[in-house]
Amino acid sequence: MLTRQLNRIIISVGMILFCFTMFSCAIGQYGSPVAPSVPTITINTIPSGADISIQGNYIGKSPLVITAPPNYTGLEPLKIEVRLEGYEPREVSFGDYHPPQDEVLTRPSNIFLGDPIPVGTKTIPAYYTFRNSIDIKLYPKK
Image (cartoon, rainbow, N blue to C red; front, side, top):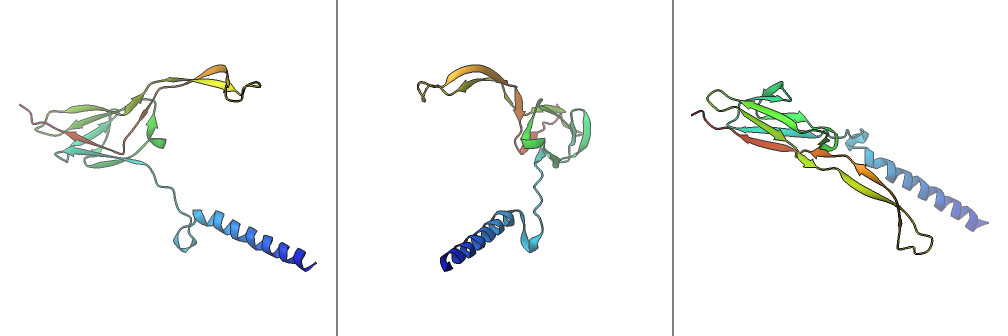
């Protein structure tokens, strides 16, 4: 009878400690929730102070920090246009291309567990990934 009560107490305390451990990860100092960081891309020009346009829309002067697409991925590259008086204008396509890929879908074999059976394919579409910064060098007009 005493061991049954002792087991209940130990299990209850263990579950309480488990809950505190699991849910305290999302709480920062002083018990306030931690906001997720917003992914950004820094655009630098050499020299700085250039006008920056992205996809044809004026954004501001360099150095500049913009909000990155979710997971630093997108379906097309970012077209960055840079202009500074006395320098040649630059147009840069920013993003690393990843071509479409075919993935073979399988199911486990009933005969040999190590040999899965192909049942079809799934195509992962092409996409672009973006680094968290870019440096664009400008050249003086000739």
